[in-house]
Amino acid sequence: MEYQYIKTFNNQGVAHIQLNRPDKLNAICFRMVEELNHVISAVDVNAVNALFVYGSEKAFSAGGDLKEMKMLTQEEAERRSHFIHHTFRLLQTVEVPTLAFISGVCLGGGLELALHCDVRIATETAKLGLPELQYGIIPGAGGTVQLPIQMGYSQAAYYLLTGENIPTHLALQHGLVQRLIPEGTLDVTLASMETYFGKLNPEAVKATKEMLQRNHTADVNTRYANEAALFGKLLASSGKQGIGERF
Image (tube, rainbow, N blue to C red; front, side, top):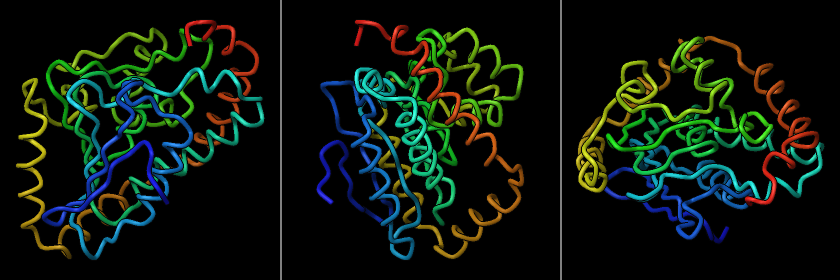
């Protein structure tokens, strides 16, 4: 598959996926999701110890492509939501650890992508949030499922219902991110973590990931299905008007 909206390579035993739609602040269109599905599914877990996902210093991802969403029927919106769920959940089920490195804007679908990684490292000035309610829709890429799991029910409820950005110090405190780094240090941090993971014993890394997933017992399949159905319904009924002419 030829990649238009992502870049991918392996180095020092680490697989890299870089979101690459700079003119749209790495907004996630459906073609990008298809590319992510293809590359994550093809990761050679016998050749790498980790998978890194990141954008640029300016933007991890500004979110889903709202202009594209406006064109969807209810049925197509739900179908795409299911496919995005499947794709993002590959980051949880792939045999090696997945790490999201967040800098700049990380909103909506961008944050949902990061939420499916095992670990999130963010710059202190990153902008995190799920603002979909302001457009008359809900997150359609796993946000209503993963945010409560990562942050706890009440914290997730507040940010889902208000659409406010999540301050990075609170994101760290409540487990949404696991480490904060100074602005402008994305590349340095990537290189340092690449060196670290490249030196680890592959079997020990895979065993650790396996045990983490095995012990994460909550059955979320029904919640994902409910989110997809509601996302499709709301996009069709109020979301297109809520998105309006801004996109």
